[in-house]
Length: 343
Ligand code: NCD
Image (cartoon, rainbow, N blue to C red; front, side, top):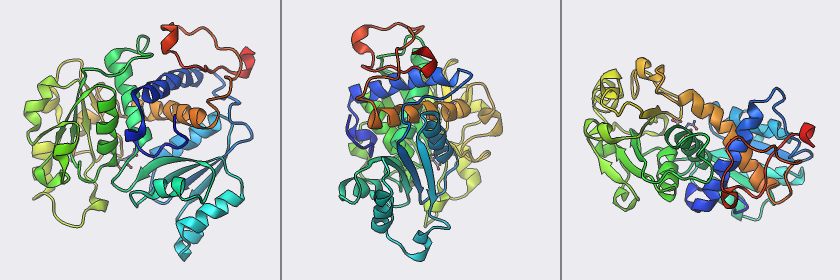
């Protein structure tokens, strides 16, 4: 594992599978009455959010607290950033306070990379979404959700998503979720098809490791998972489609379209959902939609990432309880997770 998590493209297959397997261990902690591990006791993590967020910010905070880290929340609104302070000065202020990890969301693509490579701080940097570029923990939680649903929860450890067919639909142009998913799903052996109007596909899409289609209906019957993306109006400076009604008619997922998917295929959405636009309320609330499950899985993934970046080389916290799903020993993470009470 690298010291920072900036892009899903930086992860090897083994890195990604290690994070997914560690997240399975973390998920077991969430099923216990006391959902806390002492792993990051005495470590300080700062959540540095320059852009709006609900799920990602709360999810990182929950993950940090479950690992017993000291958590500092920073949002640009109400801070000295609104007085014109630069990222460098903000970073140096954090460094002076002795932080061990910085979770950063920023409107500028590349901001987390700059922070990690500038020499301004020593802390591990985790990208929680930068502009239209990357959102690696979202791709990891999506892959975790797919592995559980499509490969199996108990046989999943050590496994990737080889041969699974994933369709990603909507505003690919502005979506860091789509970029990160294409990178990670390709690394994990899945076959990805992007579906969007031509105006919402980026220049150079031909070099991405995926298929591209303009026709949603023809891709649905062969998909194992269909991931719907929000139309990111806040990043648009022009009209990319005639009307919302027209967009929903051609690229929205409603019950009739969902019926064209194989019976066990799932519908995914990173949130926030715009009901009536890319997804109807009926589909969003159906059993096949994993949006809420993705949020819960996000906490386990972020715990795994923090653990591996900040403490993963040290022995685990106590002895592991033998897991229900015993795996081939060479595929298991070198470290396992347990609570104090198990020592
Ligand atoms: C996404 C994001 O912020 O990139 N949401 C998320 O992190 N759960 C997608 C979006 O905003 O539509």
